[in-house]
Image (cartoon, rainbow, N blue to C red; front, side, top):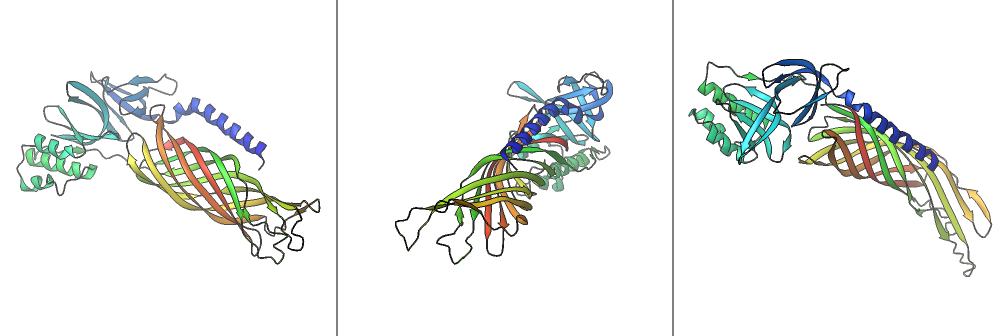
Length: 399
C-alpha cells in the first residue's frame, strides 16, 4: 500500500464521515410518544440527546423539535418510560430525564449516565424528588423511607449490605412499598432486552517499525539484514464493531489496514581489509491487514469514560519489496523472501477515552500499540510494531 494510496483512502473516509454526519440525525429516532406537562399525549419519534434534552418529530418529514424536562412530563420509547425529575437543592432546581425503574407508592428512577455522583432518584408520595448520590444514598433512603419498621426492610438499609445498583435500590423500594401499602402493587418497568452495539470507522496517525531477526548465515559479516529499521510515519484506516458498548466490559472486532517502508544502513567490516569503507543499505516494504478482537474495560465511568483494552487478532501481511544495496559493488540485490504473504497472530493493547460530541454522540480517542510477526522463511522472523493515536466514530449504534 503506497503513501498516495493511503492518502486517498484517508481522504475518502474523512469525506464519507463528514457527509454521513449530515444525515446521521436520521439514524437515531425511534417510535414512541411524549406526555406534555398539560397531560396531552403526542405520538411520533423520539431521539435522546442527553439527560436534559430530547428531540421529537411526528414523522420523518417533520422538523425535529427540542424538549427539556420543563416542557415534558414523560416520554416513552424502546419499551421504557422516561420521567422528568426535578431536584430542588440549595435554592435551585435541576431537571433531568430519568428511566423509570419502579412506579408505586414510592417510585425509583435512574439516569442514563451519571451526572457526577448522581445516579438515581426517588419520588415520594408527596411528589417531591430525592437525589441519590453515591455513599450519601443510604442516608437519603434512611431519612426518606420512615413509615416501615419491618426488620426485613431495615436489614436492607444496613451499611454492610448496601450497595448502589439498580437491583439493590429496586429491592429496597419494592420492599418498602409492600410494607407500607401492601394493597398497592408497584409497576416495574421492564425494558425489552436488545443487543447493544456500535459500528463505525476509525483513522489513526501511526508510527510503524520493523525489526528483522537474525538468520544465522555463515557470511553474516558481509550480509546481515537483522536489526531495527527506520520508522514510517503514516496512517491506519479501518472500521470497528463493538458489542455492549455502554457496559463496563465490552468486546470489539476491528479491521485495520496500514503499511511500512524503512531501511537500515550497515557498515561493512571486512577482517581482511580493515580500512575498507563500504556499507549495505537494507530496505523492506510491507503492507498488512489486522483483525484484532479486544476486550474493553471502563475504569472511570463519568461523562468522559476512560477505558483500557487488550486482545489478539489475525494478520494478513505482504512483504512487497526487500532489497539491499552494496556500495562497494554498486548493485541492488533482492533479498530472498520465501513467504511474501503471511498469516499470523498479532496483539493490541491501549488506553482510551469516550468523549461526547454533539451532546450525546460518542467519539473514541485511543493511544495504543499493535504488533504482529512476519515469517519470511525457515529461520527469519520480523516483528512489526505500530504505535497509534486512533480516532473512532460510531456511524450506526443501538443501546
